[in-house]
Image (cartoon, rainbow, N blue to C red):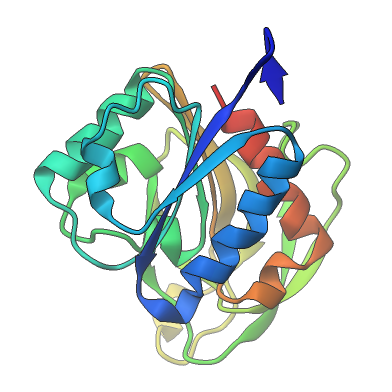
Length: 218
């Protein structure tokens, strides 16, 4: 993708808990963006958020748990407020930096629980948006995230939380799966699916992520 002959610039920031395969998962979408004409760089340190990000059009993060400094979160937030897009999936975006509320204000949601076992659940598209255009309901077999979500999000896809033996009192609330939001001048795209590479290979999931990244790009 190029504007006035200049490639869009994407930065992938990856690390944290290795179980979410941050390198392999981000390599998948870095290759996609390169094929779409983006100039792509990757970083395996959160100090990337301390750099001048004014010319970065999209940040894709896959960093589960871990700790970010106040300065790193402030740098990221400032970049997005100024117009840099931000996108991510699963724990790499909504289970990051648990002790940084300023980060959660950016993402619009925070992971709090999932059942111990994988479950098969249905995802339903509930909004008209480029990231989900033409997608119908589909199923995934993976972790089902219970999240605390910002009421200001534009929710694109939902699921009914299934009976959970660890949380029998919560019932079956409608849980957001994919959403978008604004953070200043920047666009933010989040989906809670993506625990393993097989999840990213589900056509509807892959489509949401690739379209979500494109939508979020400055």
